[in-house]
Amino acid sequence: MDFQLKTLTVAQAAAEKSDLLIVLVGSTLPTAKDPVSVLAASARKAGDLPDKAGKLLALYRPEAVVPSRVLLAAIGDGKAASVRSAVSAAVSAAKANGPKRVVIVFAQPADAAAVAGAVTAAADASYVYTTTKSKTEPRSIRHLTLGVPEAVSAVSKAFDDARATVAGIELAKEWGNRPANHATPTLLSEAAKGLAKLPRIKCEVLGPKEVEKLGMGSFAAVAQGSAEPLRFIVLRYQGAAKDEAPVVLVGKGITFDTGGVSLKPAAEMDEMKFDMCGAASVLGTFRALGAIQPAINVVGLIPSCENMNDGKAVKPGDVVTSMSGQTIEILNTDAEGRLILCDALTYAKRFDPAAVIDIATLTGACVVALGGVRSGLFASDESLAAALESAGEASQDRCWRLPLDDDYAEGLKSNFADVANIAGRAGGAITAAKFLQRFAADYAWAHLDIAGTAWKSGAAKGSTGRPVGLLVSYLTNRAGSGATAAAAPKAEKAAKPAKKAAAKPARKARSAQ
Image (cartoon, one colour):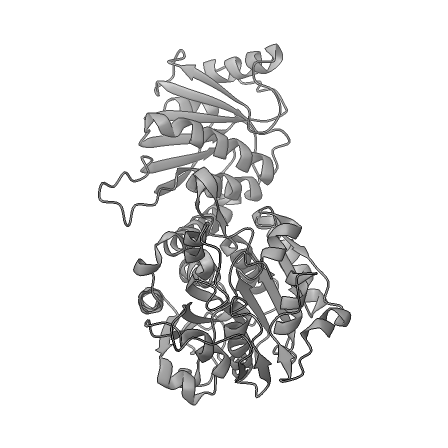
């Protein structure tokens, strides 16, 4: 979808050639005397357009308006969350008529957050997956103009960043939505290689031999039951000086999760194609970085494999040795995400990172705790936790911090290894995070459990692209806050050779651990 930002009053927007005009009406009644503003004010006074964000009033061929269809959409207090609700409702309602050109105009001044919210909401509401359909019906909206009454210079950066974020979110949606036979570890690695065409991004991919040489026994154990070879993807974005410590993103890339010997129930097992949404979010974030070009260095690590069940599959009770040297008793093969992530977290140390954030569809327990509204956040560093929470609020891709008390690790003790991979059902999201924390002691670390937020089930089944918005907001904020050095466009990232890189996929989404 092509986005354009213009300085437009409601009257000017009504004169634009389009199939649909969406007017965003705030709590303050419009005072302009053009026909649409007068109608909006009258509708508000009459109670036909309630002030609640997302309420709509449809108009057909109003006087002196070029588009035949007009939607008045209430945005309440005008804040980003309200704007998102209104735009999402309006675009969703309009899809049935298949508009190709749409104009969205603010009837009052809009700040940067509101503009960004309008862009991301319009893209989300109009998104359509088509890759594996024989008769494609792509999104009807081809061109969207966003109008603000004030000079666009005040919000242009927010608009451009939002467009880039949308591109990243839609890349994450694409790979999250693809069936497992169209999104194997090899295909995922090819998608990562494609990102290297963007400025300042490089990609290297490691296979089974390199992973074995690195001693990633935990990652390799998960992959050994599948005919599909594992892949360890290393992405690098260099926007700052060569010696600037990078932020490392680690994305769980289980492209399909049967549960292994600890087999999942058949019901809704098809949704385990979404178990690589952590990996997809890393790809999407790099797609956005390539467009925004912030002054920061970022490394992306994606351990990717399938968790399948054949004669070579790992068994409950098996003990494996991780890259860190710690041994792990695998009590449940369906707790595989943490087994691949732990080796990736060990590998991350070689980059001397400023911070490491892993993103994984890790536990069903997190879904029980937080549902599909907020991602679970765990962090060993207070400033990192605060920055991620702030980025989540700013991007409307929210998270909620959960505890990491040492008492929660008691259940991970094993008589036969250094640690067990599960600790029972109670506090399952926390005990999974405690397992990962053992391998992230040498740097500031955060874990995002996106099992409840990475996709939707039911009639709206599909990837959400989360938490790309949160991650992009965090990284751009960090780059702009002076937390990183000035950009050095031609400098290469400070990192050890990628041939020494191999990592493990993250833990599976919505498992009852």
